[in-house]
Length: 314
Image (cartoon, rainbow, N blue to C red; front, side, top):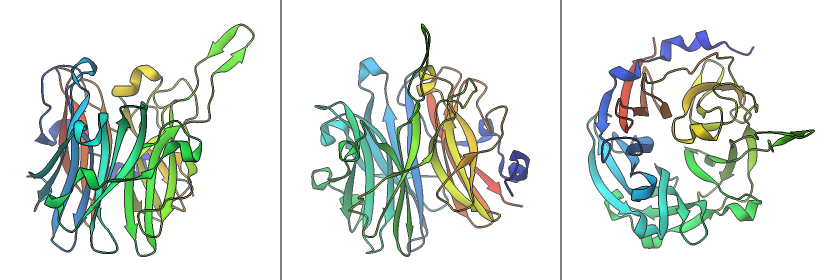
């Protein structure tokens, strides 16, 4: 049975009360800390955070990214840093660092290729987090190989049989023409890809599309994280009404009974939001009786900080 939004009220949090774990690199619109993903490493009992810092478009965009570790999921210490120059990139976006089935750390980073102006995903590998080398990276998601202009924002889950990755790309909703009137098309959608070794991803599948409607979530559909809940999978996605919302998206909920095909819950408004703008990139780290929610939060001055809220499941 398809659930209602109210069935997940036990997970809802007040984003304004979250703990700030990274401040933006400046004040005002366009200064952001976020673009993050988190992993809890059972071998070391540490949380591993990837995040990026971004400045306004005319001042460099996503210029710096980092890995940080924490014993409690709240206080993080940077242990590795890279810049967009290290990737020959015009901007760094979302990355996700996971421990692979072979025991090695695997850092998946999405960035815009400076020479080509498209987004792709590269892989860095190392025995130790501190020893990551940007020059050793290898491209694992080349969008043109799948007939896409860009693919970015990886969300990676390691399971016994391999690696599952959600990535954001373009939707199938083209602008619609009716007589002399043209209606706006869709924004981003979510694809799913799998691999047995974390290196070779040979197919992608559309699993979550925007409805292309004039609603707060109608033209964006980027899944940021997934957790198992009840008898299915609950996804936290970013929605938006049009291209104007590219940088101020809102969090919604989607549901899947098989962990592959997702459908958004009926929501008249975002699940959580800031009174000053967005709450986006909501990453839910399942910790059994607790869930750690990491998210970008719009401050009063228009900048975005990176926060965490911890919710008891019951």
